[in-house]
Image 1 (cartoon, rainbow, N blue to C red):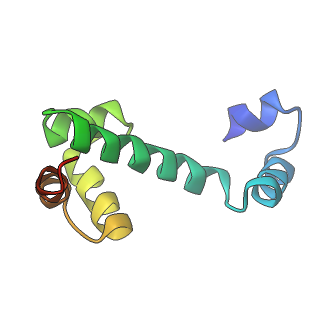
Image 2 (image 1 turned 90 degrees about the vertical axis):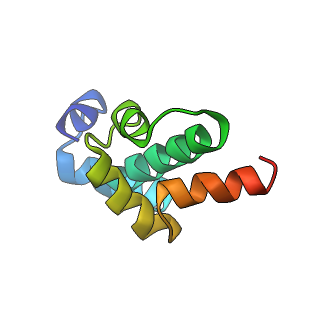
Length: 89
């Protein structure tokens, strides 16, 4: 966050306030959303392991990825992948 604020030449709190006003969500929530969208796409289109998807999308560990994914999507990454295959995605 500090680097983004510095790049925008704004204090951190001011950057967060402006970002939230413009996008409707705080920067870190936006980052998490983008990571989840990328992970969903990879679950739907690749045969990569959950561990590889977690690392590639910035979640760090598979356990952390599973926690965030379940909270946001309501199911596990593996169950999501199976349902995506069943829907012909």
